[in-house]
Length: 499
Image (cartoon, rainbow, N blue to C red; front, side, top):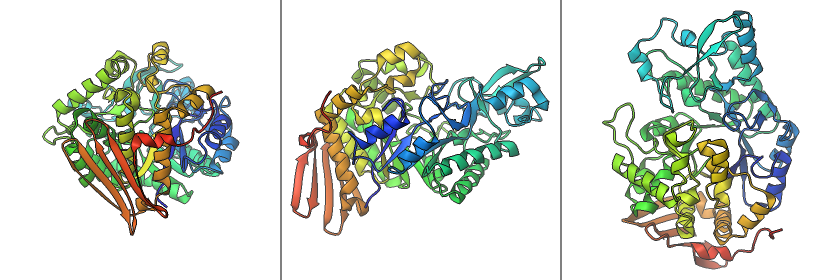
């Protein structure tokens, strides 16, 4: 059978806890997903970056559950978890010990400073070469107990302290985390922020040869423990193709903006071009816990002579369309308008990015599911969620607009919406039809697109108009051939009564 559709979710925002997530997976979502990526459940899960700044990478947040709960979920659903290789929280016991004891700390050398990264110093030109997803230099001043001040490397936020992945104690620390993940029956590890993990004087310190060597080293550790690996990198599309040739799996982060361009501009040409060059060892996504990236389709930031998948004008028009479709709620959540880790992303739910147009949203999902790779659906996208402006207002964290906390009643109500029922039926077709294990073709022009899979006599076809959102899906089965508009798939039975 083809790779099944996976769910990516925070456990506290869909179920309230790890046991709560298991109840949702076994209950209203039963039979929908062939795996689940549980976003960081380490302590604390609610720090500066929603769990991506762990104070203790080896401990499950007690408010969410335990390692036993991870094993319980993994007994029924292949689990993907994050290995955060670039940084730890400033509240981590290791960093706090280093602040207290300086060179006498057993963790001295674990954390990157300007001095340790550039032992011979750095010129202005060398510092300007550094790649960072935020403006400014990646350093924060921290003072130790004896008054010594250091420029500590902080790629993302001031609370996320970059670790030195060349230091033996850092490598031991990461392997301890992998031991816990493997021992808790986790199947796959995502190397979060790995592109920034290795700092090299005189280079961009992003996806260098040394970075690839580190990825191979960690991949070998994972293979020895029976763990699969996904590399998470936002970068120029050609670099993604090169990365994919050297790793097990990557994310297709170019797909979301290309699908949005097709559906807002009525232009499928850039998407069809991407199908001819993209790697197929990819996890396909439309939305994630992060924003919608534009760097993945833009010109090469290090060599503007290399064009992107979309032109600068097309990207500007796309961003304006997302803001307009979302009633400008995405505008208030993106760039410098809120506290954002990455200013090169647009923060919005995918449903609102398309103006809550059911037809276009289902066509977007169908395009995702027909694109070669392993489809992954974000929990807010599964429920066709709207931008959570109230949460954004409370936290002023841009990404929170797409990180809603769902109650059980909200889950039940969303699952009864026609667009969600149709999406769930589409997921079931993608999970079960044998044609998806065969050969893929795609064609189109203007706003029209046709995507097909075939294996022997088995066949499934998608025909859509990205300008209007009108689309049909046709498939073979043992009892004959079937054709249905995507919206008509909503005739599937409700998944859960509203209570």
